[in-house]
Length: 169
Image (cartoon, rainbow, N blue to C red; front, side):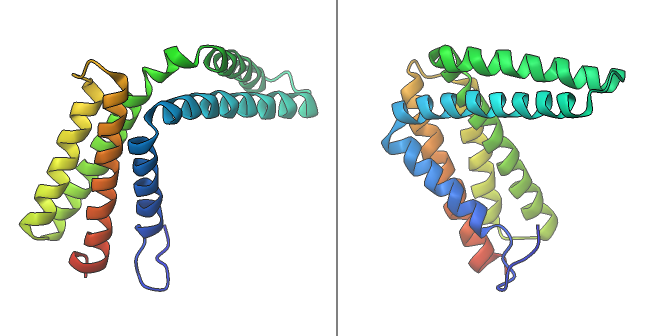
C-alpha cells in the first residue's frame, strides 16, 4: 500500500477497523445478520460475474469450465447463506478471531523486527490473545463473542493508529 502525504500507510484501514469494532459492540445482533447477508450477496455477485464471463467467452476449455463450476458452487453457497443466515453467523466470530490473530501477529513481528518499544510488543501480543479467545469461542453466547470481537477491533485499531502516529516515527 502506498504511503499517503503524511507517510502513514495504515491509518485509513485502522479507522475502518475501529468503526467496524464500534458497530459490533453497539449492534452485535444486527452486525451478525448484516455480515451474513453481505457475504451471501457477495458470493452471488461473484457467481454472476463468473457465469457472465463464461457466457460471453463461450469457451469449452477445462479452465473456463472449472470457473463455471466454481461460479455455480459460489451461487449455491451464497443462496444457502442468504436463507440460513443464523447458521452462517456462528462462523463469523471464528473469521474475526483469525483476522485479529493475523493482524496482531503482523504487528508483533513488526515490533520485534523494528526494535519498537515494549508497549508496542505487549499491545500486539494482547491483540493476538484476544483473537485466540474470539476464534475459539469459549463463551456461551455468540452475542458476547461479537462484542468481544468489537472491543478487540477497536483496541487493535487505536493501538495501530498510535503506533503509526507517535510510536511509528
